[in-house]
Length: 390
Image 1 (tube, rainbow, N blue to C red):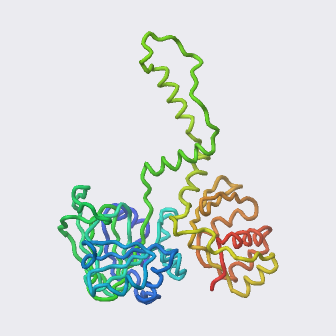
Image 2: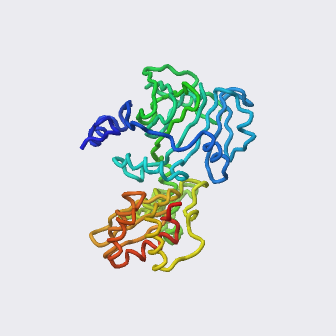
Image 3: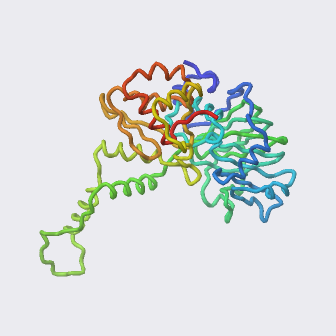
């Protein structure tokens, strides 16, 4: 089936021909797309203490490409120059659930790979400079026009301007050049250099970024998990034999150390349990899995009554969800770095919860006949994983 978001390509053909291989410009990937907030509302959001934001001043700051991290203040916005600055707000999907629905259009990539939806606001000439990202990104033009130039030139540490908070290239030689209008979208694989500049005032661009953990990050997290789950074991050498030179580290000692370290290896089931926790851990200090937990607990009867009155539920954007099907009888649902085994009649709820973000009462009502469904949904409500719409 073709996907309008991908220029009427099939998802499989996009993944085969473009994903992590080459850029793709898609005109009117989202025709009629409208930004559901004003620049003033976005600035107000950037002043909140639980919002990750940055203000980037290419000019007229303390130094070129000055970065101010949020929470920002009214004073920060009061003295901005007319041009050459940018406001970035991360996880806009967490703060505006209607924008979270936009991410459902990217379900041709596994959810655990998705990082967040970031919005960039800029007046004319606003930019974050020519740079590369280490991950895939879809750039959706929401309002105004932005010029994008890209280059496939290799970029190393020596090609970046030193002593900056941003990784901006010293020199940028564009190879392709486009101006994106509202509804247009540009896909860029990792490490493709790009340079976006606002062409008029009130330019807004939405960036759908994907997670790409490094090998070192995986090892660090896995070792912490393994050490936590296993009892500590000391080095032993009951087969120690006399050696003529005590300063030498012998082959037997190295073999003992190797065996001790290899004892941290896990079987596939343990690796699954670790990885599910890893990919669903909170994004950072600004995300909190309990931020939507209700102050007052409800009985199941009260909950079902409220569920009907509110006409449904939303899944929280403050936490990550993923699941692994262990076998035909058990599926482990991972939420916010925690594991929740589901079996029996409610095993399907892992897939049900992770497949969508908004659950209408009409969808939920027939499922309430399933033993344990309502109770499990109530548990997720009390944990803040699902909530009633405001």
